[in-house]
Length: 536
Image 1: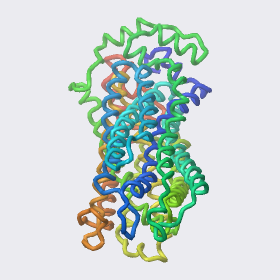
Image 2 (image 1 turned 90 degrees about the horizontal axis):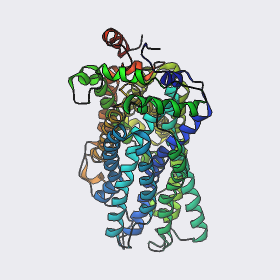
Image 3 (image 1 turned 30 degrees about the vertical axis):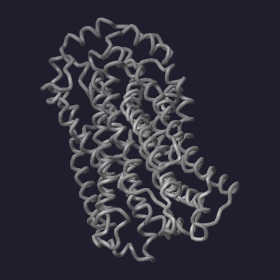
C-alpha cells in the first residue's frame, strides 16, 4: 500500500468478497435494469403506437410513426440521459454519492409510471406527454451511470473491482430479457382475451381498443424492480472514499466501514489533513488536471463516443435480420397484438444469443485479461466483422446467405459487450481522483450518449437507399446500408486507436491510479509509471 494510504481504504482494497459486495451489485444494478428495460421496450411499443394513432384509412400497410415523431419518441430519452449524466455526475461529487442516489431512482420510478399514463386519445397529446416523461426518465437514468459506477468502484476490493463494476452494467442484460419476456406474456394474454383478424382482412378491427392498455402496461412495469430497491439504496452508507477524501471526515468513514466490513478501523483524521495539505485538491478546469488526467479523459470520452455510434446503429439492421430468418412476417399479415408478440420474441432471442453472453464474458475475464486488452480486442473484432458485412454486402442480401449475415451481426455485438461496451463504463470509475470521479464518469458517459444519438438517428437517415424509389416513407435519400457499414467499420477502427489513451487499472487501488495518497516527492515518477496506457 502507498505510504500515506488510509487504513479504512486499504481495508476495502484487500477485503475478501463478501455478501455486501453482492447486495451492492444488485442495488446499483437496478438502475441499469430499468434503463435497458425501457430502451428495449420502446422499440416494441413504437410499432403498436403507429397502428393505434397513425392509421390511415384505405392504406395497404398498417400505420407507422412518422419519422419526426419516431425520432422524438426514441431520441428524447437519449437527450435526457445525456443531461442527467452531466448534472448528477457533478452533483455526486458536490453532495455525496448516497444523497443523490435516491433522487435518480425516484425520478426513474415516477417517470416510468407517468410514461404509461400519457394523456389523451389523440396522437398529438399522447406523443407530447410521452416525450415529456421520457425526457425526465432519461434524466434519471443518466444520473445512475456515474453514481452506480462510482459507488461500486469505491466499495469494491482491488482484486475483483472490474468484475463488480461490470456486473452492475451487466444488469442491463436482465433488463433486456425481462422486457422481452414481459412483453411476450402481456401481448399473448391480450391476444387470447381479445382475438382479432389480420390487417389485410380488417384494417380497423386488427387493432382492438384494448391494445392501448398493452403499451402502457409494458412501459410501466419497468418501475417495479427499481422501486423495490429504493429502501436498500437509502440504507447504504456513504462510500468511505467520499467521506474521507472529499468530505474529510475520517471518523465517519471508519465508523461506516467498520459496520460494513465487521472489523475495527482507526479513524486517522491527521492523515486526512496531511493529504489535504499536499495541495492535491485541484479542480477539473486546471493545468494540474490537464497535465495529469487530460489524456485519460480524452481517452474515456472518445472511446465511449465512438463505441456508441456503432452500438446504437444496430437498430438499422434488426428489421432485415428478423425478416431474413422468418421470425417476423409482413406487418399486414398480422394483427397489432401478434406483431408485438413476434417482435418481442425475436428481440429476446437475439439478446439471449449475443447480448447477454457478451456482458458476462466481460465479468468473468476483466480482472484476468485487464480492461485494455478486452477493449482493444472488442474494437478489433467489431472492425473486422463490420467490414466483413460491408465489403461483400450484396453477397449477404441473397436469401441463401442470410443466416451467415445473422451470425456475423451477432458476433459484432457479442464483441461489443465482451469489449468496449463494458470497459468504457468500468474505466472512468477507476482512474480519476475521488473528488472528480463522478463528474469525469458523467462527462465520459455523456460523450457516449452523444455517440448514441449519432448512431441511432444519423445513421437511420444515412442508411436510406440512394435510389429514391427504395427509400422508407418520409425519409430523404441516403448513402445506403453498404456505405453506412463501411463508415461504422472506420468508426470502430478509430475506437481501437483511441484505446491507447486509456490506462490499465487492473489490480491497482483507486488511490494508486489517481495518485491521491502518495507523498509529494515520490509522486512524479510513480504516477508516470501508473499512468502508462499499455500494460507491461
